[in-house]
Amino acid sequence: MNDALLQLDPLRRLVLAYAKRPDRARYALAFALDSRLAEVIRSTSETLIGQMRLTWWRDILTKAAAERPKGEPLVALINQAERQGTDLTPLLDLLEGWEFLLDDFPWDCRQFDQYAAKRGEGVFQFALRGNDNLTDDQKTVAQGWALWDFARHCSDPDMREQAFDKCQRLFERAPSVHFDSSGRPLSIFCKLAQSDATKGSLTADLYRPRVASKIIWHGVTGC
Image (cartoon, rainbow, N blue to C red; front, side):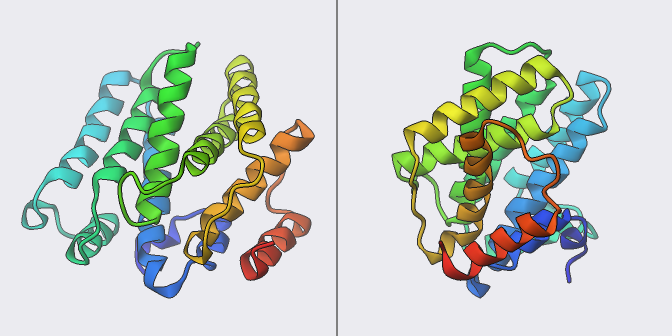
């Protein structure tokens, strides 16, 4: 197993299991890069340093494969995706979404909206192999998922509340969004986010057996 995958949290590793075999490497890259960029933000105390670290990843995504450094497992996944003809543009959108986390809090509505669109749609578009291949409703829930994940990890109570409120409103706009079987991992994430949005509170622990059983059931049946 690629070392980059070993660094995924248990939730993403479980969800990844429900990607179709031909799609699994692409999902793995989307999840692994999203996790790595999150770690950049979590471990950065100075904005300039954080921007430099994100710029390094931007350079990786825009350089030719021959110019990328060797020995980095996540870079190896990027090279593999490119060899298979996968468009990396949505990953640049994902990176731009994380760049908003370098902005000082509090945010205005524009910052929330741009973060959600760039990160959420970036992950979903790349996972589904292509740019601008999402329906309007799929874009809505992609943004809702990004805001839900933001709320789950944000330590600022006001920002967390605003993000979750926006998440709830997005899922109210698109209460029943469908993905085909190639999008099963994405629909699992949407089910988790929508469940919290509907009940009006964030699940404290996503690693409970009850949550795992819901993931497994939806992963297998799509229901």
